[in-house]
Length: 502
View 1 (cartoon, rainbow, N blue to C red):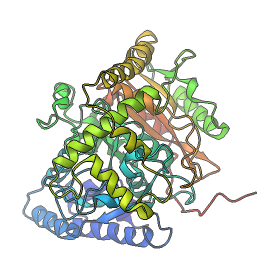
View 2 (cartoon, rainbow, N blue to C red):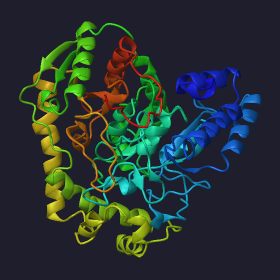
View 3 (cartoon, rainbow, N blue to C red):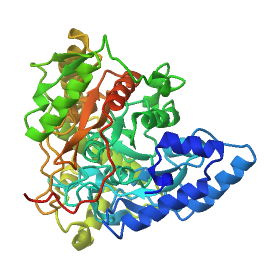
């Protein structure tokens, strides 16, 4: 692995700024690594499409550097973008679906525009669980009809999880130091955990959703996937802030610091109180052992651990959340398709028919029953949807995180990000996901940071979650950085074909 692809986001940005590296050199190395590993070698299938203009953009960044005209803190740095996030270039935005081929977005998503304004070079788009994991009731994470099956770079027959599967696998495999994902419930933090990454799902409203395929308006957000907490802070500096195109971001006013990196402290955590959500333990002894060891690291740093025996986990994709998703899926898909003139289908009904017309290629392993149920529903003003919105928010906030954080005077709640290590890929049966703490933060709209905690059998990643109240990204980044510095456990993947039997 060469220095270019081994570098973190922070290191790459610094070396480019000093002139030690060129953007063309970095981007060329990243593209070569993608060619070696993504279709050949271990065939990760993390990248769904490369930007044919990436090297020209890198050359332009180098010329700007030579003129003393750096755009911003990511000038010349290569990044990858999830295929549900619009890019106004010669790459498509398809949600992983063959039925959406030819959808060239009329403008960049707000987060992509911010990355370009900061000087980043968009190398391409990443594979994902088709339509954000919500086409079928038994999907296979990381599979899409357009991109095939994304593989976990640590153990190739294990899931990368999803739905931001390709973004996670790409950063873990050192294709790029930063990739964007998007989450409605778990789609950033689950794949980050299972690919030994730092994944940040921000407070809803901190980062614009304009130009991002959505599902549920009170939960949707873009997020970052990096290899260090410092890199997550740097990326958030670029992405956070108001956007008139997304009214939810107005609430972020006064909550965006000048530099998130100013909160990173490697050292003691005296005075910090962390609530241990034991309800998320007990799904796998290996995961529990890794996370309990991580809790010992936090305790050794001086943090006070408070057991939360009465903290009742919100179910992942529970009944009320699925009602929310089905209504939101119909509304958001129809709105997205109507606003994209090059989309090959114009409505959800047309999308369902297009899937049927190519069933052999689009529906070979599982169907589209969630789509078929959603399309029959009413609009977002339907009482059932309004009630589901209120129920999800109440369960996660008033009956969940708010009293736990307040009554125990907690800085954050900690838990295993996933209940088990990465499970085997099975497109016929679907995912075997057990446990996981993503739903409570997702439904509340609160921030959720996952950091690498260790490995089961040496190569199956386990993540530690830190969940806080709204706009508490600075606190979570501080805690995550302190933990990461004291427990630098992450290692690069070796692309094992499987876990060997004894």
